[in-house]
View (cartoon, helix red, strand yellow):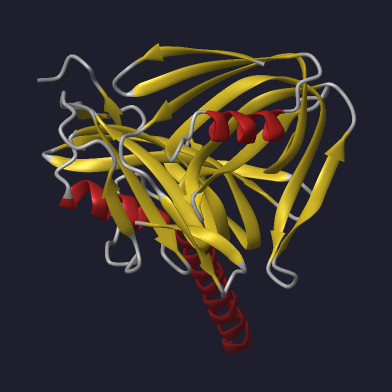
Length: 191
Length: 143
């Protein structure tokens, strides 16, 4: 009896451990869309206004070795009070994480991309959600054999540089939370 | 390659490439001819040949990552122009799509157009300057 009991206990323990490990992996592999972007990860970032006096402002936002570009763009948007913008960027990265939106889980699956890659193309926009600018951006990366990886940008570490050309539009664009996807979507009609 | 200025502020050009035009060289010539010093551009089209680079940290040079001697869609070409030692320098990246929909991409080294490539370029009043970066061995934009 005690043998069976012990065996049972052991099995239950193994089961619990397995579940815990699995859920931990799940937490590591997926990220919720609403997760706040940490700032302060792009200390070398430089910004220059390219057309002083114009209504639609053009900025060069330049990143250097080790700067995390997604967090830097968020910092730029907050610092320059951006309420509507679009941008493209090229450069090179060493280390990145892109996301793939899983409609079942309503979360981004994290796809790490290690090593030196060309940042072939990054394009995105900035709009307001609850009074705070939200950066939404996608990128395509190229490896040493020209093969590509792409996705929603979660992390992107500049190496040696990333050059972003940002156009800040004078009319505010707002986002609303879409309960079906858990994503914030741009609603042009929102005042 | 034919071009037309379509707007004054911001100064905006449309460049149309035709079969046989090589984009990297033609863009460099155009930038020189128009004395461009702070531009960004994007383009789509199709190519008969593409040579794409990947920056090799060990050699500090662009390795030819892939050479595609075949018809491909030019899915996206984006880039910028800044001054290096007073001369405009074009920096562009490319994604191409092959016949089976797979994508390849890299730093633009050479791209031969077939049948067309449509490029929109915006020049800003403020110049961008590049400076040699000893760590990477290439010139980076300094603002």
